[in-house]
Length: 121
Image (cartoon, rainbow, N blue to C red; front, side, top):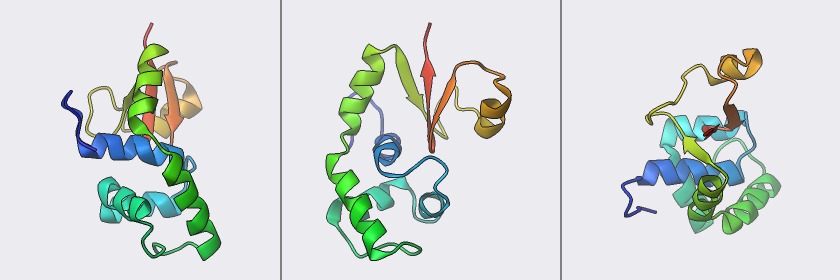
């Protein structure tokens, strides 16, 4: 998942996960915290045994979503729309995203799970 433009595997993995996990998914969030986004994506891409906390049926649904995830395409669509993704560790990431979403303090934050899209303009 590495990119020539300098965006690393972690960044693309988090964008990938926005297509697979629902925003606020506590189980998926725990996987990312404990294993890292790249490892979670690797297990989803490989069709590995279910990670802890999900049924076989839910894991099958996550695998189906992961088969359709294309983070590079999502980045291109965002760029064409004047948006950009930010995640923990990138410039402009607000560590208080949920607070910002509730209060509207920035007026430009759209939450997509563990990644946030900022609208330029």
